[in-house]
Image 1 (tube, rainbow, N blue to C red):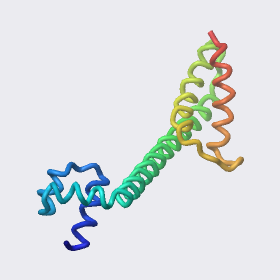
Image 2: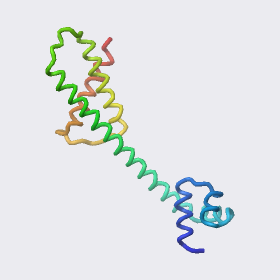
Image 3: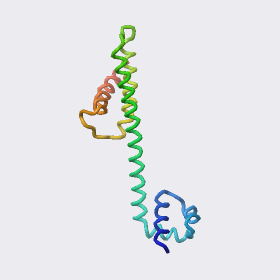
Image 4: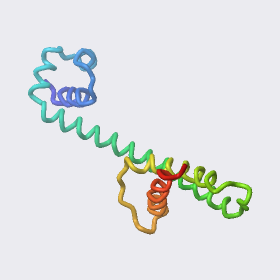
Length: 140
């Protein structure tokens, strides 16, 4: 059997495609595919692992983009807050608003478990988030 057909089988199987669909796509019997699956088990597992690694990296990139957008929003909120007189707002209301935004950033960043340069804006916000999270637990 052509090695290209076997490689295509391993790719499709690593992607989770059922034997019946693979058989129809590459023109090989289901019985043969099951035999190949046993024979090429380690190669299929390696391909599957590579696929998972790629998906994880894509997820991390998407999360990083969401965090960057949240950080930009946080910067805008902080800039606007710097221009305001908050004498009409209760401190607790102001802290709750800030806490919600920071927790949104935290929700995005925590699963990433990224290491950041100390001077990066995201590192600054991570430190703020940790502080605010502690405050939020004791705030009414």
